[in-house]
Length: 171
Picture 1 (cartoon, one colour):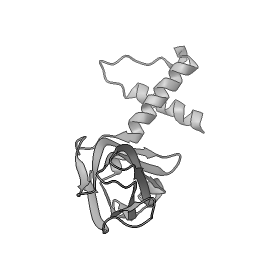
Picture 2 (spheres, helix red, strand yellow):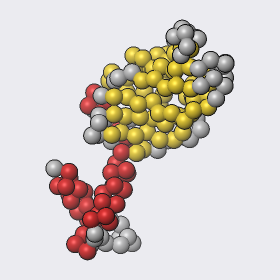
Picture 3 (cartoon, one colour):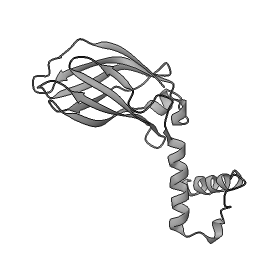
Picture 4 (cartoon, one colour):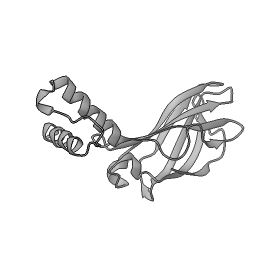
């Protein structure tokens, strides 16, 4: 099934190439070259850099800052969507940042959590399982908004550090 998909994808790429682009001779390609073309096409289909600029602060208070790092990815094989962020922890506590009651484009999706050590920054991904089917995503470009309740807890005591805040991130 994957090979059929790959061949169809290669032929689509071949027929959709721009006039100034080189044509692709599939018969002359090695297995590695063909796989590289397929991998690049898959990347283009699953990775989306939205209009929200890299470095946009999605949430900030006196304890944490969550900054968007520019990409949304949809993994059709694992029914998962993720957004890349940097979490800055301004406290002396190790924190777990949670998103609950989450929706994407108005459809309920699975909750997520990321960790950040005390007084550190962490490159993280908010990964949402069951997002592709539940939110009816066919590509990363379909992600219009993510909405949910954000809170964070001290990972040593499991107590909330701050009250829950409702957030909406528009892409």
